[in-house]
Image 1: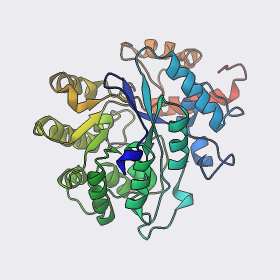
Image 2: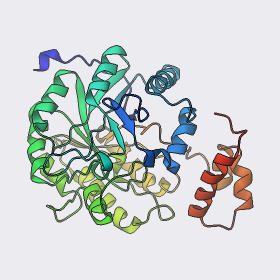
Image 3: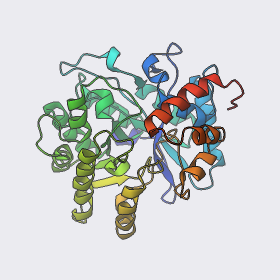
Image 4: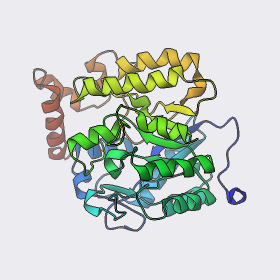
Length: 353
């Protein structure tokens, strides 16, 4: 099976392992789509600002063009892993279209990775789907370098017996699992709040503690990459921040105390968001001591704010017209402020992308 792998990279390549790609609903839904609910979210507005693609311009090919152009202009990154995102499935193996708010097919990314050498194929296979292991093997045959799960958005219990079976297939293929752990406020899901907390904490309904799914996967011989190093969003934006701080401590303790032969890693994607600096400061000494455990990822096109900004004024300077609005709303709670930004943005005809 491995003789047909076609993804290639050099040992000294700098690779961003966490990059998202998508296309609009109605364009080619066998390959990708974004739900109406997602396109109405504040997160989607931020993505449009980063990519500089307006609502009227959004298309799959245009997104690829923007991504290629930004990658070519990068001073440091040589290649990126584009992430597929499988649809949500029921435990009976049925597709849940109403619970799927972002879908990117494996076929689409396998094609892009063959067309453009700077793109690597990150597959996504839901463990509940029929013949999940066979689909994973097919992805490997077309050059997949890892498998991506976003539990709350895909309705995946990472401790479910079908997930446990899937870990063995990953181990056999020596394919890493990049699994989201922590709060998820970007891509909507179809779960109730309790299940969302359990699934994104990698504890699930069949585990007792945060990270139990990670332990199960490692015991099965699989390699696991904890997305975002499981860092919380911070007290201002994190509804259950105390809960996520406990998850963060548990998972990073597992990374820090793992034996040298451990197959547990973490990526540093989406670190540059307000509220996360406190947790990043805890990660930095660990990354300095064991750099081989922390992998580079950006979570592009999630908006990035530089940590060099030491005040809210400096952060807002990066957003131009938002600065004036903020100064008018200085006494309003931050969540109301964000909602006002969203409404104000739609009323400003002069805003340029």
